[in-house]
Image (cartoon, rainbow, N blue to C red):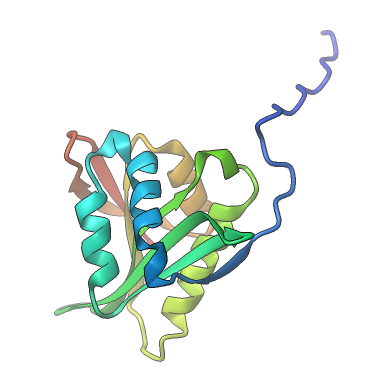
Length: 166
């Protein structure tokens, strides 16, 4: 069997991209909606849900930025479920396609989970619905310790989602 040389990195892959994670500012909400439209296009129109979630009291949106440019975001919230008590939820996470591969998604997910756990309330779980065919997101959540916990919602274009829990 012949040895193969490793494949060269694609020029478009960020090798090292410095970024900062912070709370989103209201002036960035339109940019977040635009990023969501690109990132979630195959799952349906997310413009209205993202704007609604951004305006909902109790949600927290964190952004990854570089030189004031939004590279990605995570939107998290706390919910009360009668039988299970308080749970955290990752409502949405997205990274600009041009900035993928630099660890931004993992850093945002970690920051979102840390924010939910640090909210001062005991949590039963932290959950997220992820499309069953979204292999990148499934791998991201698995790397953070999330495991399948049942079926999630269906998206506008008919994709089924799996509910993941941490």
